[in-house]
Image (cartoon, rainbow, N blue to C red; front, side):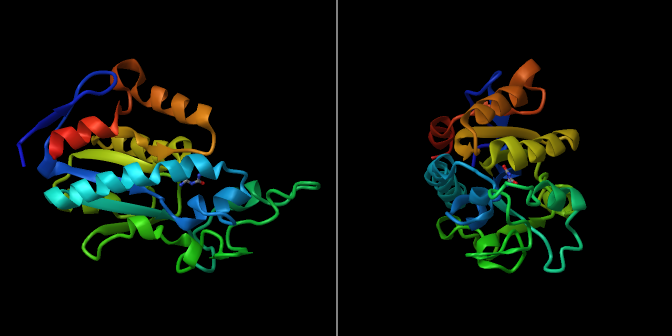
Length: 230
Ligand code: TIU
């Protein structure tokens, strides 16, 4: 691996040291990607999020093949929901006439209890299944640092730079990048390898992340990264 790699990005070129750079794949769980899951119950557009699976797989294969670090995250709660703040439960509670939010976290869906650890729907889709040696962070929040040991895991691996992918751009990807930025990590989002439930939110979110000379992150594309590392 070269000491430093530089790729075209917004707002300007992103340079990273491959030995100290990790791919972070956010919440590519059945509950967010498959029909009857939590995302669809919330009214999410599944087509968009499914389109980011194969670019994310391409990056995962690339990082594995060149021996770079990979971390996965999953959003979800312990079965007694003691780590689920009331704000997350209240928000999705059924309102009169609202059938869309008739089910909340912990309720039984067709893939098991929604966003509940240990359930089929909570796990990562088979296409992106983590290897035994790869870190999987279980998180109760949208950001990946809050109430997890991600910071310690990154420190132990001497990681300084994060390539962040996954779903959803506007929610857990953005929160994770903002948390990482405050902790001093140099982040880069990859347009094709992230998606959200609302196309305009995806574009706004990515623009906001790199606005003002890279306020929170850089944003690049899949191909420059493949070209630089292959
Ligand atoms: N609701 C929504 O857009 N996303 C989430 O709740 N979680 C993630 O983004 N992973």
